[in-house]
Image 1 (cartoon, rainbow, N blue to C red):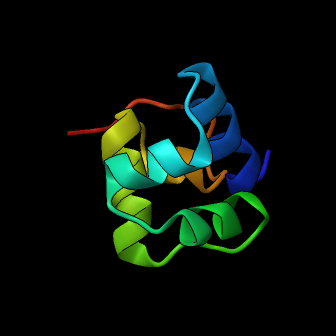
Image 2 (image 1 turned 90 degrees about the vertical axis):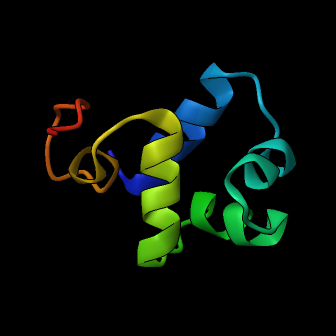
Image 3 (image 1 turned 30 degrees about the horizontal axis):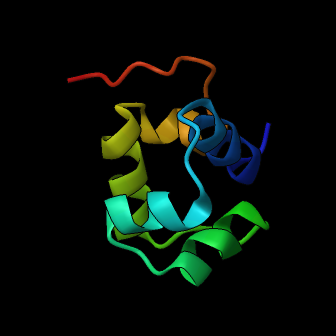
Length: 71
């Protein structure tokens, strides 16, 4: 599963619009929308999304199937 698909599923599971989520994590709606359409995130934005959902960056990027954050 790709990054864009993972963030779309996470957002929809919380019944949020793209605009609502973008506001919650401090992005523009267009910037967030671009990521759902396939653009890869900048490092800071990747961390914002991972922190918001409390999932690992590796899971978001499709490098593992383990969602848990290792702290």
